[in-house]
Image (cartoon, rainbow, N blue to C red):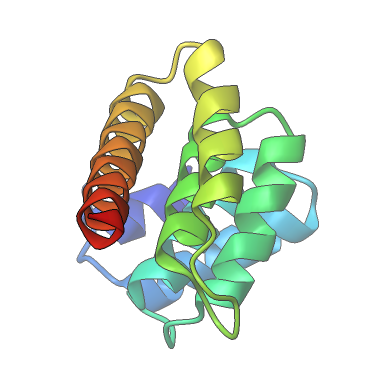
Length: 134
């Protein structure tokens, strides 16, 4: 894919803005990987103005197109919060779990990390409540 070559600088001078235009054209033609790659650029603000809400929409389209890593990225966006959306660890967990069940290693790690942090928070909250009750 020519867009990837410009994004990475493979055989051409790196030009993320040109990559974004090429990904956009391929995404409009229905290419799910192009949607994913374009979403990455919007997520990072690489060659385009950062726009996590647009990245989220593109990751969702890529996920519907069968791109497994897009589910993990949706988990990350929901865990962090994006645009006007507050962090939503419950939604993040659902996305991580969906990707992990299909074998995405990054999603498995993110799911374990998120669940561990939630367990730590529950334990801390329980300790606070127990101390307050005494």
